Length: 77
Image (cartoon, rainbow, N blue to C red):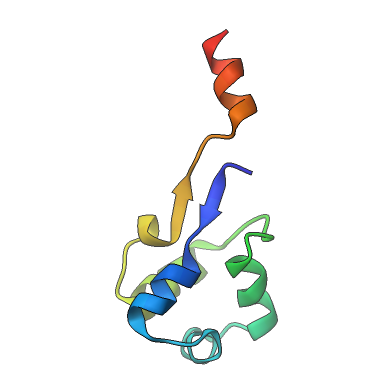
């Protein structure tokens, strides 16, 4: 997937644990872990908003688009 999740980096910068963030946002630790590892297939805007509020960041600090190599070849053709 071309969308990468940088939640680890943002948590490290904020010196916050995943457990603390889960409690603040009101999301289960299991669901937040799925998002953190990049295994989530979707994220609700309300969840993204809560994450940004608690981490004092922008969505682009958490989610980054990085085209995969196959995508780059198809676009060049």
